[in-house]
Length: 115
Length: 110
Image (cartoon, rainbow over the protein chains, first blue to last red):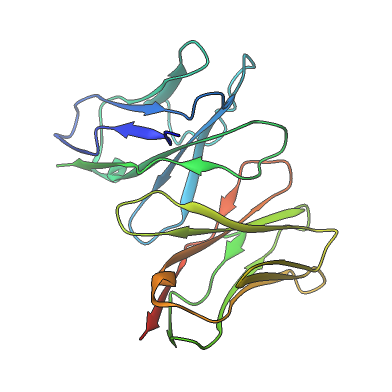
């Protein structure tokens, strides 16, 4: 079956512009996660959606970052007034959400470059 | 403050030999550990996991060992194959968001 998909695969934007990154999780997966990976770093948790519960936003680095998940499926991560330090690969993952933070299925990521 | 550390950024192993990737953690609340493998331009893929109630979990060529007293886990791959060449991430959770290490790049040389 289809895996997690993300779009665009690459995005170059000017400092100060807003960007939207999209994630389509695996059908039937109730949990959705956003991470980012900066150069030479591990994956950094950003936000987590589980079903209809309020999202866990504890990883968002600033109020310029926000995410929503419509209809329990597709999610959009929005970065407002982008800064050069926002340059990273943004990864989305989904899971069956059976409890805990176990096995997650990742998309290929969106490489964001802020010039 | 890095809660999950992979101190070796890279490792080279000959085909057929054993690869051992190490991971240390500091948070004693972590009770579930995972290894992910990542190829270039792809997202990480789940490889193997272990609960803190166990000290070993095996799946084919892959075995993960957990030493809770030392807060250390390791991934053994034997025999190593060229297709195993990738970046390996260790991750940990204690019913919290996954905390990832920075990864170890494994190169298996034919």
